[in-house]
Length: 103
Image (cartoon, rainbow, N blue to C red):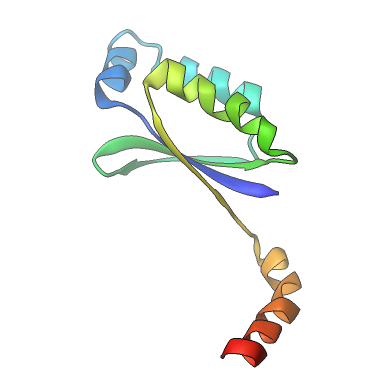
């Protein structure tokens, strides 16, 4: 299942990595390991943040995705399911059923 891993980096850890020149190489090493479908980097809540889309086939994969960010950046993470338009189209019958029953 496609999941959105939102990674908020601790500012002090991120600043230290920026100062010593390892911020980019650490992020690249983590991304090379977890092989995301896509990764975007933004400022969120005043912190460096990664929006990383990964395919998880089993919940036991979560530590392999999260631990590198915890260890390298003392990051806070959230994980949630994510869909592309084709996934949403496949969900239309379930949406229509819910509308009929509860709408």
